[in-house]
Length: 134
Image 1 (tube, rainbow, N blue to C red):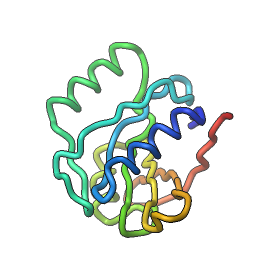
Image 2: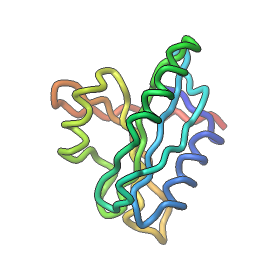
Image 3: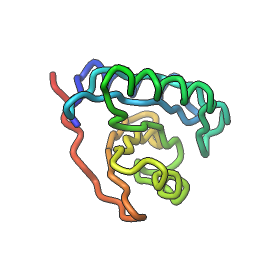
Image 4: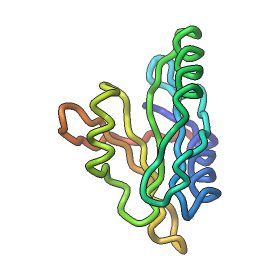
């Protein structure tokens, strides 16, 4: 997935704004390029996990599909661990085949956030590049 620097900055800004809780959201793509970022509310309001309102998610997915776009990535932050999928992430990813998992690591709040993306298929975690355009 290719993403603009502005879109990636919005995701990182969301993670910082929600800290110490995890943030979450969606990246919409068209032909492998990010076209929109949707910052969502973590209804769990937790530093350990995220949840999204089901009605909000359903509405957004309908809008994405009706526009002919795709869900390219689900993003969230890890506030206490490295930006690597947890077992909870791996379990949840089973419902979203082909969707990247973009994770913003904020464990070291004094340093720069670490952003990584993964494809998780059948429990197998594979890192994929985050291609940010300037």
